[in-house]
Length: 171
Image (tube, one colour):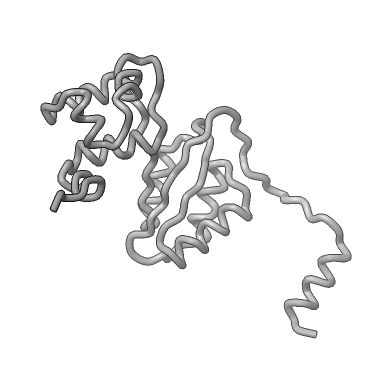
């Protein structure tokens, strides 16, 4: 029997093992974070500990660090009450850059459209969305979903890329 299997068998006789130091519990809204490894992962245990302090379970934090080591990118949800700014600053010291999804600000869409000098119909056509949806977003009747917000932000940053990706030349 291998040492690993032997250890699992012995631990199995002990029953459920409780975490002596559980992660803090936060309630409320969740924020999705994207963690990107910039450089080498020299302090993985410290990264795991900091993620646990932010409310993740040990298993989840360990899985995230493994994902960072393999793909240099990992995505996780943390509670809004976890002081995300401090978490990001702490992780940055360990070569992990933290990003989060942009939030919707009223006035964002008409501002982007005006910056590029487009009518509602033109802007909707460029983005490949229905003009009535755009009107509803601009008038505050509905909120765009995160994918639409990302598309609008991408258009604002680089309209040529959106045009190249969404439109095809007429031969």
